[in-house]
Length: 304
Image 1: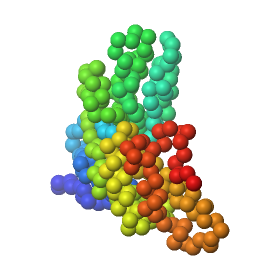
Image 2: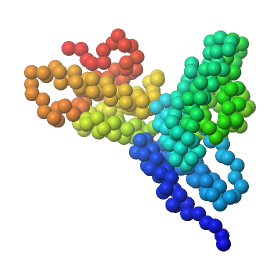
Image 3: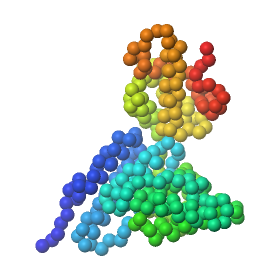
Image 4: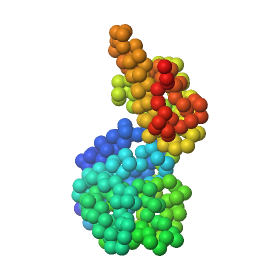
């Protein structure tokens, strides 16, 4: 009698659908990224089904590379990936440990190995998310110990592949140089996922969602002004997609509060407290071609 497996039931029982739905709620757009995450989830579900039916199967490599500019959702996706791997039984805990070069690389001989191994130990059962991973590699500097951290990571990524997953993250062009620096890196990273920049309309959707979560809203003229703000801000330095939008909304709330405070002699109703006016948006120095907040000595609200 042939054995069989119900993939739909396995999918429902795993709780992965809930994580994928949460990913859709958390992040606007990113269709190629979400599609790739679903493909990985499908691969792992089928792999588990094969194991259930005693079909030969090698343990899938799960180490990943996330490329893209800041604010495109890489950390959020790492968290959801870890939850999926935990629910499917590939990770014991499903937590994420986020590190940078400073957490892994020491400043003197004998300092790097214990630092790197401590971070790997913390990531056991979960994901080690290495942000701006290309800073680990500094060619031409004999006193730099980043190469030692990379070698330790490579060894443990292979020896402990069932114990933790490494996700390298950073700008796409610099990550390509990073992988070229060590042939063993790219061969151990099975999944390369690129995170595109958000479009203007997606950034506006993100802004409206964030405002709604905080019980604020735009007037029609303020929303039109903020659409202009988005198109101008993305052309200026240090643009970080959703992160820049979140920071901009914080400054809008500050300017709105300052405007209301100037009317302290007047009674305020609920609509006053939740409404962002066009003047709150247009006071931004982005409309003068400057990056707002770059100089901490300059106030964010217009003078009297």
